[in-house]
Image (cartoon, rainbow, N blue to C red):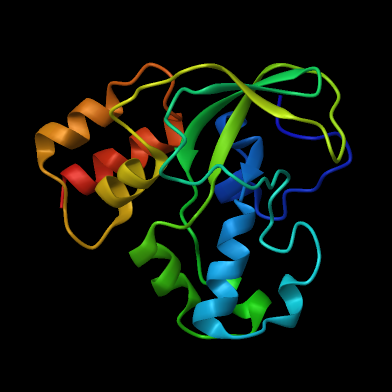
Length: 178
């Protein structure tokens, strides 16, 4: 399953992996962006950061690689953090946003679909199974994409998680060869 019926992934080269079927961007991150970058008119509507799911009360520090959630009747699994790209700055019309999101590990995360189903706005997102408690999305993001290189042993540990995205493993391997 590659995402939501009727949804369009603009860049299939970087966003077409089955383990990146849904993007979750916490509602709290919108307030953080406005606080640090001022009003951004393009953030006015739902999905402004390319997300399919946004909630309050779950952030990159509260969600772990491998967590499984029930969303409507679908079962989805957290696979990796989002790696923000320059497209975001062009879309929002402001410089420095990507650098700020990276430094704060406020990137959102991706899910793979384990069981297809239906979901709609207002449905509850319920964690039904815990993933790897050592690897929050924030920690996985900083280890793989952060400015400070994580020790090789940590990167190997992250890559070995059975529910991790194949795309994140590729990025970890690139980080290990630098």
